[in-house]
Length: 381
Image (spheres, rainbow, N blue to C red):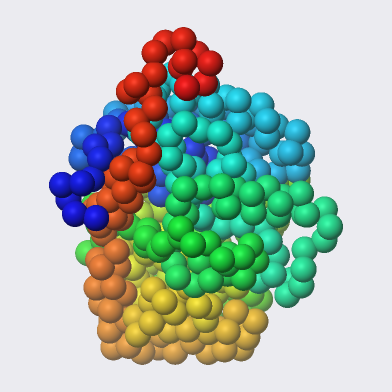
């Protein structure tokens, strides 16, 4: 579609959660869209954003509302689904967005008046396959049906890598309106310290088997450098997951994690499953040499800019880390390659590609809110 035929997009209603990478993605994208003249209303569900997260949104001029509903993958979420849908539909009536951008699946089936974009960040069924190598138990059938319905009913679907889109289509069937838009990160706030330190850093939830941090705990005593881990050590069920040989930094805010990345010489992510991996991108921008799990999404993004190791090969991980510790020339070469590759995933391109998709979607729909009177709006448009 040529530029002249694109419809204007002024307001976006975007869902998010404050738990992990979805938050970073949503805030970064919203900030870049605001620079382009759009107004974004960020609607979070799940655990409420922290005071620090709220202050960051206010500083960026991003509107925010929070609904106390369980995220779609949480136990008991099905009981909240209809109430959460009603809340989102009410937000649409009040804010009249040109696009509804859903960073989750199930509400893709909701009867929004505006075009619906579902952006896929992760899903339990693909996570389960990657971690356990088998079909999830029947307890997850309802979740799978909700995800499938949201994907089918969305006007467009976006995945952060072609590898993850292939996973989704393998599980849920062909998605004819799907495309790939890589996540992006601005380099501001990320960069190598004046002198790198002899430490290895990893980041992720300690309880998440997909992150595979336990494999690092096993080999850490035999490494010449300490391994530091940044991430939540408390599982959703309240269980505390401790490590014996890793130096735990706990859950860090973005600025503190960026400082650690700037100091660390090596960043390791032996993940079994990662649809994109924003932490890897941030570490690359911070000048870390990368050691990554050999999975399709990481190969797509970081081939020739990292060392790759089979996530289930503890000895291979040990050998790769010791090799990079001992070989300063290799370490410097990998760090430079990673930073160069990281700069090829800018936040501005992510925003431009997303805005272009918004405009195509808006052009495909009659402007419901512009034509509807107050009574029609009150009735749902």
